[in-house]
Image (cartoon, rainbow, N blue to C red):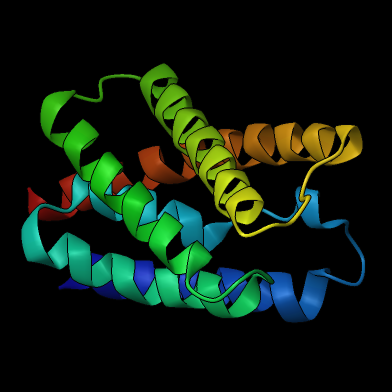
Length: 161
């Protein structure tokens, strides 16, 4: 139960910090997506229904705080959770490089899926500048995920012992 509460607090606090405190000072692509990280962590490290329950509130936070057509970011977030849970079942995460590659890959896949949904809806969501900003966001959030995931996982392993 403790991991669920920590992920919910991290997701809410990170989303609140991004939306209300930092969004006026930093460009959007430099703000780490804490809700995304909570969804990926719950998929990789929390098995079963507890992981799914931990992923639902961050998915709702992302849907409410990111502008887009209704349901796009919620569905993309759930897709990321299911992909992360499959990866977590099949791959044993031994080093930071695996976490970095997995988070960067999931962020890139989510960006492509959101662009595809927006194009299918009739929008033109991308330009060269948007692509460069998205690459910076993916790299920054992935690097942050390595430190955050390894720290949380190490702490919960020590608590279990």
